[in-house]
Image (cartoon, rainbow, N blue to C red; front, side, top):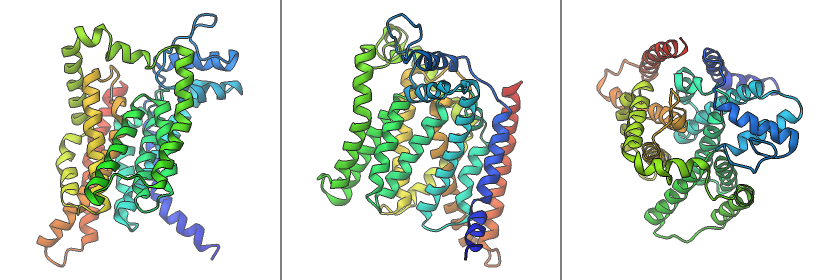
Length: 385
């Protein structure tokens, strides 16, 4: 028995190790630290040397970052003399691999049984130029994506096992402490759960574990928010006052929204989500309302819609390859795999019986991966020149 267990684990995770290796190789094609990362590095250095999260030591603190948890972790590593130029890249790649693993687990949970289809989402992520690029870069992008993906996974599992609400609370709190959009994701998941209860149970009465989830979130996030308000003197990050409440948001609102629309178009085109979207919607539309696939699909669509509206509102990001919408890469990869699986099932009904479904699944998946890999390889080559 002791020999069979490691062999079973190896068979299960060997494909994931292969795609993880592909991601590492893909990320190393970029292997860079963006200028903006050094802003966080300075804050981290001052934290390591002086115990204060500020940019200019000896001056009043200004919140010049929007990635508290990332900056704090890099600062703690700098205390033990680990340079952020290296640790940020290692952590970024590690969190990216973690998101790929979670994508596998989400696919397994939705299908209810392990199959080869479950490895398609991590394979898509490994081949994606944007996902690989921002596994590098030195910023918090992949850590935030990991917390969001963990939150969606915990939410799905909580529908069957309420103990996962505790994991959901921790994941959402850490996401909100990593980037401001974490609060947006938490609000969407909370609203989605409320809507599901109203439609399915015709009740909004919270359950014990749901209240515990809210309590854990507030216990983790609340003291940090109170501290940053006391320390920096503002309720929101500086970027809010620049992009959402400052002169730029008024005088350049149309230009910012135009920039945001262009940013979204570039993401849809370069990530090939524009072509995958019909298949994603097909997979969700043909799901039974009570199924896990419909639950996940409706949540993914809500997060995507809110995220894209928010991205358009603030003008996106000046950096290439779409780090601002990185959590949507994972949602899209899982959605595409689910939609392709549904399409193969539909095609099977019209093909001769002698065509095995497994062969059809392998052929269609391989074709999609080859076409996607070709487009992303060209994009990567163009980006690293």
